[in-house]
Image (cartoon, rainbow, N blue to C red; front, side, top):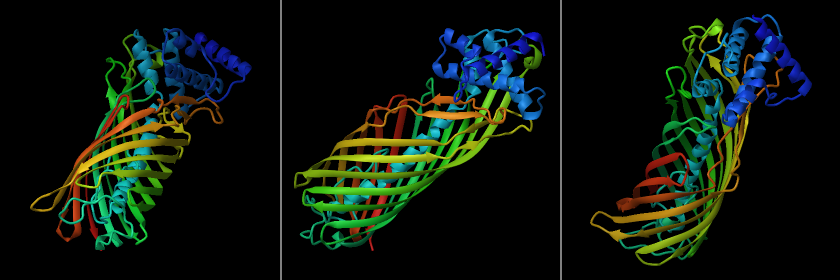
Length: 484
């Protein structure tokens, strides 16, 4: 090891001890250079963590296996930023350096909390659709479901071959289908994407889910039910083009399966109604992250001719508790009606910590993540308009609506993680911030439901989310309802 590197390790370690800093790690010469260059704060903080990890490892003396690999890679990255001529990647472009630092970090993990939130949202959506059917006075009717909307009143139940009357499931509604047991099954297929930002990687996703349940309606207007839900997401992490040497993201994948058990109630009072849901769920995550970069011509020492192409696998799970309540009023009493409603949603999601597994036997770049706790509190205000008409095969009910959502818990979260093969007991951590949740956004819905003979109902619907920055989301939903 040359004198320059020895001096950097000793002096850097002494400065760190004098500062007595912990948590994210000390400010280092690497972080200072990055800050002076105008690098994003996430890159500055990641550079500090990489440098501090390197200094700790170097101060321990003899290294082997994974820790030697980690030390070599962190040293190369640090000296690249500092402009050293030995053991650096010899990048002439700042963007190459920033992209390489980003690949050494693990901001892709922020997608887990988004997937867990969407999984919970979908079950709330399906249950809200069922509650709408109950309170409308036709227990086997179809209500559509919508992407990322908790318990929205979306459609009017249709009983018989005439336009429906407004009102709930009160004692005055004497139709046989309005009381007793009923079953329902809703499904959905979704797709969308999110653009890369300074804090989070971009991705494309595909999803599908189903909710199966049963409920019992009393003559008093009260209905109680239980439902089981399942959701599946497949996320392809973006491989974001950079140069021939380093991309800002080398790609990867996240797969998620979620299950939930929910209880709900509906109480209808003529034109007014109140709904409620309490739900508990779990999600399993399997993840794969890649690091791919190449040293530039002229690199020397351990960086000379270096080509990194590594894969990191990991698994973890989450639990989530959700609650929702909505209340609304029905306007109109003929074929055309409109609902206006208000509500609140609450989600609390806990994601367990985990450690990555690197495909190489002596690779040392695997990360260890801490647990995450994500909360969401949203208000709901919406309106849905529908019109019923009779046809030769049944009653059709086209509908359209818009919903405004406001997020109250709209602060950025910090992902805490460190290198798995850092010095034992190290307090150096990456603290990657997530993007602030969007404070306000809208849900747009169009669809049609139909009633057929034998008290069977079906629907199909398209839903889109508007107003989310850097994100698009689409969903096609469908389902069946019937009585026992």
